[in-house]
Image 1 (tube, rainbow, N blue to C red):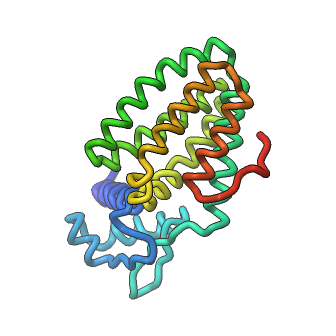
Image 2 (cartoon, one colour):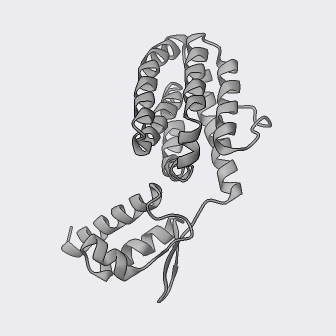
Length: 215
């Protein structure tokens, strides 16, 4: 990899991370010069990084003005919630009783770490733990294509959760209780009840009624 390619990759990774974690908020205009100074690179790799991020749908580039960070439309948010309900619910329903029990035992410990992250006010850690927690539901189904699809949604999920930062911290007790109920339903080996709890949990997180979905 050449020096310019390396600088472009570093610029891309840094700007993308700033978008996902909420440092660069939706509707914020990013300037090439400011980003270049912040990252310690020239404007050329920043320009290449912004073009790549535009292709991925994270920003809109306006020549000579900068790049506008895009938010997520209501349609995209509801589609994301729908997709997660289907993938995670189906994963748990298709898991063997043995896999469900083993996963329930492991996730009980993960919830303790979530509680600690919330107690510390560490939103970043809580978001990462939450994403890993929900990914485990898809893993349980032992379907690599479903897991790949879920992983492709991970960045959108991180972006959304960081944008809900204050809301997440404000309803932290409810989130933990919902996570504990999800684990309890797995431990009880009741796939249908798990899906209903998941439907409620995602509906509360995203602010939408997901009752119309039947994974």
